[in-house]
Image (cartoon, helix red, strand yellow):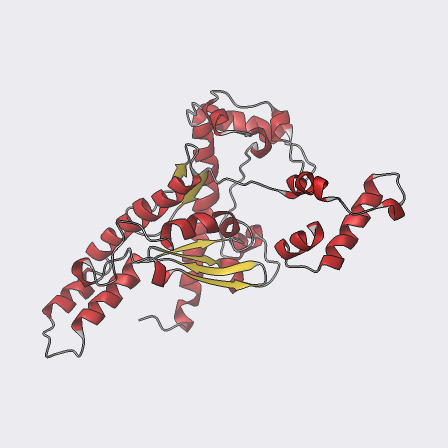
Length: 317
């Protein structure tokens, strides 16, 4: 039973999961692998706790080429991941929609207003289509299909798939309300990776689906002549949101990564101390803002350069 549950979660077979578990059991104990036995029903809850992982998102950082949003924006949770996802959808996407409607797409909207019903077959449909297109903000991530989207998928479904009292139909205000939920929540997956998630306000895409396999983030930036900004953050030190209120940089040992089995060099730690002083950082929350901003700025520059590179070969309406 436990192996079947784990196999279903990992989209693998029960036999493969059991073989891996046996190998790990043999690796980390002196007990013969033949002593590996199943569990009783009483032990099932305890075993499931071993494999249970609770991951909560506590910050988002976005940067774009939308007028007014060129500088990175960092949203930090106060303990409610769902509220964080809601804010990302409502504050950023809705604001971007208003800006795009008044700038880049202003002429298109004005042109539609000048059309008479006799000039076009279905004016309301054209207007609604334009509203839907402009209101859906693309969110591009790097390798986000395996990690980022898997973490927030339940929060996205909660906001955009389950109807809310303030949701309205696609033929709402101005003939193109952009809060319609149930009919416009679309997921495209390949194996255990999200290719795309489409909601009324946001369309999540993974740039690694459009570049060569095994292309690292550093290689992607270098390919489009963008310098990677070196930043470090004590991920494992932050065990609760309250630690973000600490007013001093943690010791160098706090930056140790058990995932990579590596520690921060003295030179890099001195650089972080210098950043803390020069940027006027007051808390780890401020430091998180700086760290994420340094990470997102190069990515948006690389995206811009990639568009410039492919534009001569692509017909854009």
